[in-house]
Length: 220
Length: 244
Image 1 (cartoon, chains in turn brown, blue):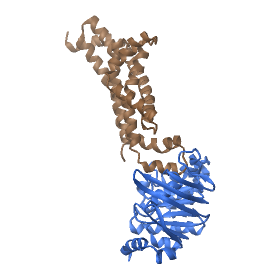
Image 2 (tube, chains in turn green, red):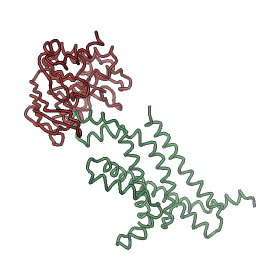
Image 3 (cartoon, one colour):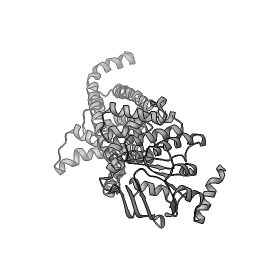
Image 4 (spheres, one colour):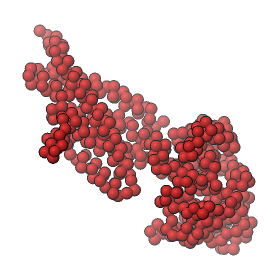
C-alpha cells in the first residue's frame, strides 16, 4: 500500500478525534486571550500610575511571570493550588495559567503603546476639562491602539501555539489528542504531521488577521 | 477675575517662578513677554493646573486652582488653552477636534455640538477644511482649529502659550488675525508671545518676565517703547532686530 494512501486512510480514522482537540485548543486560546488582555491592561495601567503603591506590585508581577516557564506556571495552577485548597479542572488551570503568563507580555505591549502617545495630547485633553478616564478612552487609547495592535496580532498566534503546553496538565486539546493516538497506534509520523498541519491551518486566519490589523492601524 | 498671588515654583535648585503675581480683569488682554527660560510658559500653565506651584495662590472667579483637587476639571473646562505645538487630536478631523470637548465633557448632543463646531471653524476661516485630518492642514490652519477647539468650551478666559512660535512666518498673520478678533470681541486673554507687534496693538497690559519675576508691567506703549529696565530694553532690541 503506497505511503500516501495509508496516510490518508489513517488520517480519516484520526481526524475526528484530532478535530475535537482543535475545538478545545480554540476555546483555550480564546479564553486565555481574553483573560490576558484584561489582566495585561490592568498591569499596564498600574505600571503607568503615579502611585508607587500600584506601580511596584505590577512591575514585580510582570518580571516574575516573564521569568518563569509557562509549563511550570501551569504545573503550579494544576498541581500546587489544590494543596492550597483551590481546585481547578484541567481546562480552568490551563486557560488561567496561560492567561496570566501572557498578561505579562500583553502588559508590556499596552504600556509601550500608551507611552508612545505624545504628552501634549494628554495636556490638550486635560485642558478641555476631561477627567482621567475620558482622557484614556477618547485620546490615549485610540492613538495607542496603532502601536499595540500589530504586536497583538503576533501574540494571538503565539498563544495558539503555546496552548499546546496545556497538554502537560492533561487538557484534552490538539497536542494531547495527538499524543494519545500516537501512544496507542505508534503511527507517530501520521499523527504529528496531522497535528502540525492542523495548527498551521488554525494559525493562517490569525496571520491574515494580524496583517490586516497592521495595515488598518499601522502608520499611515 | 484671575488672581495669581505671589506664586513660587522651582525644579530642584532651579527657581522658575519667584513671587509671580498677576491680576487679570474680565475682558482684559495681557501679554507676557520675556527671554526663554524666564518662566512665562510655566506661569501660564499654572493658571489651568497643567503645572503645579509650590507656594502662593491662584484663583479664577474666587475658585482656587489646584491640579490635585477634583475641582480642577471644571476650572479647565472654562479655561481655553492654546499650545505652541497645537496638540490637535491626530485621529480626529478638524470638526471632530472642535466637538470633542462639548460632547465628552459638557455632554452636549452631537448634532448641536457639530453645528457650533462648524460655526467656530467658519469664524477662524476654515469652513472649507472641516473634514480634514490635522496632518492634512498647515501649521497655521492647525493652530486655528486648536483655537476653535478651545473656544468651543465657551471659556471665561483664553490662555495662549506662544501660539505662533512653531509657525512658518507667512502663516503667523492668519493666527494673529483670529486672536485680534477675539480680543476685539472682549475675550479675556493671557498671551505668552514673542510677537511684539501683536502685543503693541492688542494688549491692554504687557508684563516683562525675567528669572521668574515680573520685572515691569504696564500699557504696551510704555513697556515696549519706553521700558525702564535695562534688561527689558536689551530683550526688546534682540527680539525686534530681525524684524527691522
